[in-house]
Structure formats: C-alpha cells, structure tokens
Image (tube, rainbow, N blue to C red; front, side, top):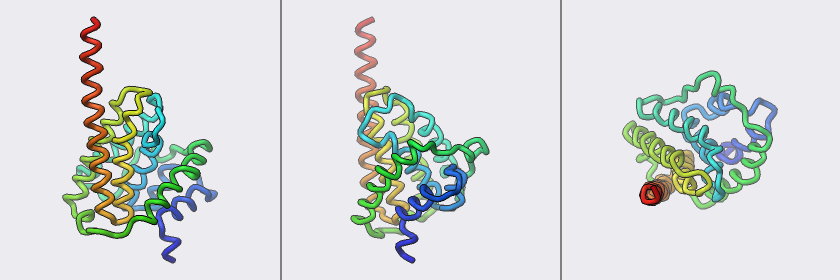
Length: 200
C-alpha cells in the first residue's frame, strides 16, 4: 500500500493510464495536494538546465494564477474549463516519464518527513503561494535562451516536492535555490538594460 501511495508511482500511473492526461484529471487525483503536483508539472520543463526560448512562459503564467489561489486561502485548485481540459502532448508525457519521474524517485530516496508541521498551517500555505508566485514571475521575466529561468523554476519544483513528501528541509533548500535564481535574473537583467542604454 505504501508503494502505491508514493508520489512517483501515482504520477507514473496517471501518465501511463488510459484516462486523458489533462490538468483537470490530475487535480481530481491529488485533491488538496494538487497545488504542489501542478507546480511540479508546470515548472519542470523550465527547471531543466536547457534554454527554453520562452516556450514555457504559458506554464509559468498558469503557475502564477494557481499560486494566487493559495494566497487567497483556497484549499483546492480551481481552473477555468479551458485549462482543465488542457492535455499534455505525447512529447511532454515522454519527457516527464523519462526525466521528471527519475528525479522525483531520486528525491524520494533521499527524503523523509521532517518538520511537517511547518508545511500544514494556513500561514505556511499562504507563504508557499507567495514564494511560488515570486519565483514563477522570476522565471517568466528571464530573457529567452539565457537559461536564467532554470533556478527559479527549480526552486518551485523542490519546494513543491518537499510539500508532497512532507519534508520541510527540502522545501527550504528549494526556497534558497529559487531566491538565488531570482537574484540572478534581477542582477543580470539590470546589467543588460544598462548595457543597452549605453549603446543608445
């Protein structure tokens, strides 16, 4: 029973099952934990150390909209019908199976419930939403092909996996990684703007 409830196994069953691979079906499967699961799936592509060229911006926008729901105190995800019916394409499903699940299993093998009470209070959920909103915005604002969206997105993924595994230490590591990423986006972005103004 414990194996069946593992995050990686539940995600794999969803990815390989016959039901439509929509965000709506994922929300129904994970219920209150669906916030964290959606953040992992939405930010996973930009968390990989490869330039995305801005193609993941739509996922970052969706992540920000979902994070706002945590900020206003929702305990379950609400999605417009258009987003609920959005389905992962075959290429995305393969990437998640081959890359995301392997990394989640690695984190599962090195994680355990730690300081769980820090992740379950109303204040911590609001803080979670605020951090995801900030990091997702940082990833969204990163210049295309720069790779600077990687660390803010990775921060969201690590925090969310920490929430799913009841591991506050992993969530803290994610917060540090994401904060460094946002700082890099702001610092290098300012240098680019200053350099461009000098040219003109």
